[in-house]
Image (cartoon, rainbow, N blue to C red; front, side):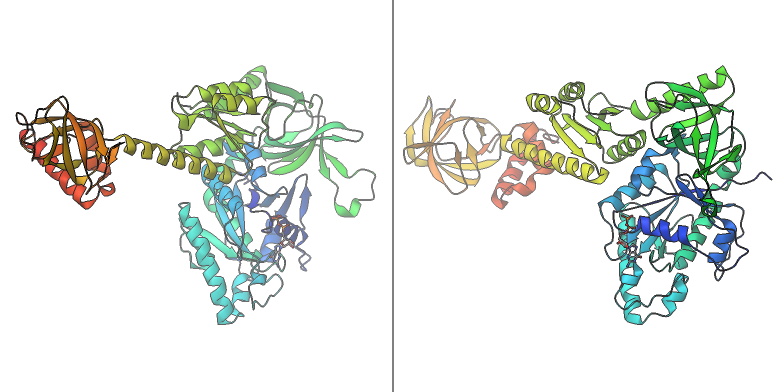
Length: 588
Ligand code: GDP
């Protein structure tokens, strides 16, 4: 059986919910038992060997182990998650979503969940800061269930309520979740582990569930990835005294050796270089030595190391690299990188918003989110917003799409002026969720405003009665007093008789000598009707209906009945009956 590689774990969550504290706590874990191997510091990551995890979890351990340990990426947060990518997804194999249990979900928590959903990354929820629950009795590093058993009922209930809230929040994102000890099938339900990053309570269960998840979900992947071509992701490009420009990288696949040639995806093209040195941090006890790094000949995934190589100037953080052995390899790598970029950026619509983001990861996450809420995308790219983006956005037919979404990028000079000129709206945010919320809200408001305009423009039903005693003129136009029995009467509408025959067009209306444009239910006023002669077409005392055009009638009947008064509704139904006597499908 091939060796399994170490799973890569990332910690995400809202600011101040405890990501850094949790990573520190895990890093500083010391176990009294001497036999357990210690924590290994990597560049940009911390490795906890499986023996140490077993020690931490010794009271509760119940899984069969096949992985060598867990590699935690030191940079916490969703930025690390979307920036650090590998072929076809996120760098991290697993994630801890940390939530301050007293505060619950916050914007960045929601963002993190949506990122995890986009990348289909298995995760555990760490419900942090349980030591802050009023009445909580802490015990250092205790498994949660042991600590739980010592709490009084009141305190327990407090925590339970908080957990239920988390379950509800996760449900909104389509995840079913529960407290870890109530879960039977971890492949269907997201585990919530109550912890304290300060006291260490719950950390045993948290680690054990991570190990379990890694083995359940990722075993196949992990097994495949330990051998073969080295593949990795650039964490950071750094000038290092005496070494020049170096790259901190996470190797997620294969084995990398000094002397290997690697191809790195650059902004415009692929950079090919060869590895001159592979450096690891020197263990703490050897820190007296002049350099903080030690040089190694080779390294196996997963690991965080510093690479020394020529030509690293143009390399960008977040790029991927791969060991190459031939021109053919380089060509394939270049094509694959290009294709992956295109796959993300080019599934676009003819008509839609313009999306600009800082990284490929955030681009992918936002594309997915926008699809979910059915906002079409015309152009999606990594980079700052420039004037061309404004032109593209302004060329949309639908005003709702004359929009630029700018995530974590700058507006280049002149863009704002240009946008104002072309009527393009720019939404610029650095939290995915805030960005989406603002756009959604704006679109809804715009839609409502339009709806209102549309309703305004519809011809509404009305039923009127001519008042024989107020015939002022018999024709051209006939002028006669009317009473509005139901609905509202406006200028320029056509009238019909109860038998469906036409009864002229309302040309103008006067009340107490003044022209009016609307007459409401119950009002009496003088109306000029064109196209009829009283005494010939009309008696002068009949009931007439507004002849609502078929298309308007259809919209009214289908969507807007609620906007009509009871009387108007009744009159409209009578009107429809008149129309449908001849043609039962009229207005349907
Ligand atoms: P980050 O922004 O997510 O990295 O959050 P930090 O790890 O910096 O934590 C923010 C604050 O919360 C710090 O003052 C921590 O000491 C505190 N904190 C973190 N975890 C816990 C915890 O479990 N219990 C308590 N009482 N405080 C915590």
